[in-house]
Image (cartoon, rainbow, N blue to C red; front, side):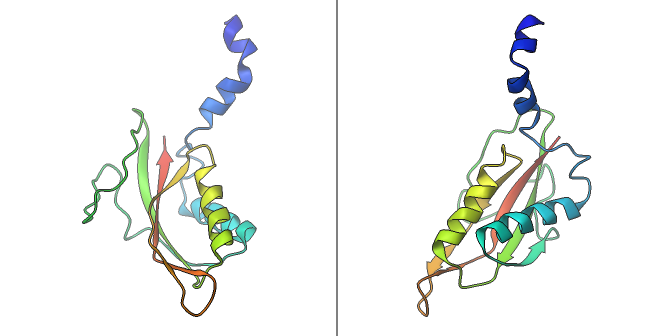
Length: 135
């Protein structure tokens, strides 16, 4: 008990590792979070799609082997597809990716395709697939 009291900050951070299903009960919260990350990075999301996403507990069928992150028991994941307005400034895209990846693992990018945009100094991105972790 004494250890837990002394390390209360660690306990609070550990509880924040995944999103509560109540806080992500509605897809609007996920949309708000992704749009906030995009706005802070200076890019625009043109579409967010939950219908093409892999249902919770189902395996994705892709030609390439997806990156897999072990998910603790009691935690589910759901996929979201996000499309960005192209071309995208490369540094802005990195800030967007960093924001998603640094949110205590509530969201993690599982698939993205990039190519150099020939008309500008930016890049063209394919659809991002983002895993959202829910308990």
